[in-house]
Structure formats: C-alpha cells, structure tokens
Image 1 (cartoon, rainbow, N blue to C red):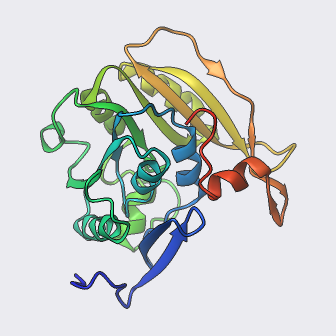
Image 2 (image 1 turned 135 degrees about the vertical axis):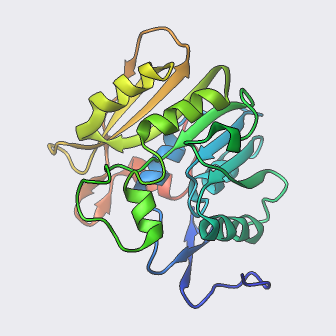
Length: 253
C-alpha cells in the first residue's frame, strides 16, 4: 500500500466527470469501462437514499454515484483484497470518506454482507461470462470481473434482494444477448423488472447492452425506454452519452 496515496508503479491515475473524480487503476488488471458510466446514470436515485454497489472493483460506480448524488450515502462491496485497498485509496483521493465506505464481502455468502434490508438501492455490474465461456484471463482482477468465478448473476440478485429494504430498487447492466436470462433471474430472485433500456453502439446496430432496474416484490409491469445510442459516428459520442461522461445529472437523477 502507498501510504502517501500516490499511484504505484503498476497503476495509472485516471479521471472522470471532467476531472471531478480521480481514480487509481491497475495498468494490467481490471479497469472500468463505459458500462459503469451508463449504469451510474441509468439507476434512479432519490435524495438521502442509501446505496450499495456489489462487486465494486476499484470503486468507479460508487464514486460516480456519490458525486452525482451528494445527498446520498454509498457503500461498495468487493471480494478481492487488492481491489478493496485500491478502492479505499480512491475514496480518500476524492475526499469522500464521510459518505462512501468500502467493505469486504462475498455475494455468495450473505453473512459476509451488511445487514439485511439496510439499503434503498442496489447497483451491480456483474461478470458477463460463465467460467467455461470465452478466453479466461490469467490476471485475477480481469478473471473475476469478466467470468463468474466469484459469483454468478443469480448470486448478485439474491444478495441484492437480501440487502434491499421493502420496495427497494436494483439496477444492473448486462449483455443484450442475455436479456431473457436477466429478466427471468430477477423475477426468480424476487426483484420484478420495472424499467429497461437497450444500448446500441450506433444507429441501426443491434443492441449490445441492456440496462434494467427492478423493484423488490414489485408488480408485473415494465417500462421500455427509448434506446440509448452511444456513437453518432465512430469519432463522436452521442450528445446524451457525452453528457454522462461529463457527469451531467439527468432529469431522472
């Protein structure tokens, strides 16, 4: 650990939201992607909500939510010790110790998580691939972030249900190809899908991601929102995504 909170030789110092957020990341390990930014802006947050991010990695989503919604308290849960240490340094780097805490926990072991029913909102960017799918990275940070070695979709949803208060909400991002798996798994875990938005790389392309928000023990109706287009052309982000990257709070926020 770097006691002066400076980047290690194996780290980069990156920024988000037009330098309002600073973030240490591993050069060779897990690094946040656009998925995290889209999820942070998609989830509906109210003032004074208590939020928990499951599988928080370096803490990118938790940091974004704390900055976007300054009247909230955020908790981030991560299983890998090195990632926990880096996330805690990122919290200190951004001066958010009073509202953002990083905890060690395993979504497969509910006893390792905070108290049940203690949060209004759960967010998660769970691993997208099964352990037998695709190339498995030799880097442990990338391996756990991409493949379901330390928790599958069902584990994240069950943990979310456990942590949510009555009528609490859970939001996640997942590959569009697995949309049916997401919706069926959410309902099976007691979280009824209520909002859905497909993400397309460009106009006319197939959806690449799905953003879904559900309510604990909610009623069965879902709002399908207008598609989110990432690029107007290969060199230019769509205006909505550009605003997200700049940290502009949407009308929903």
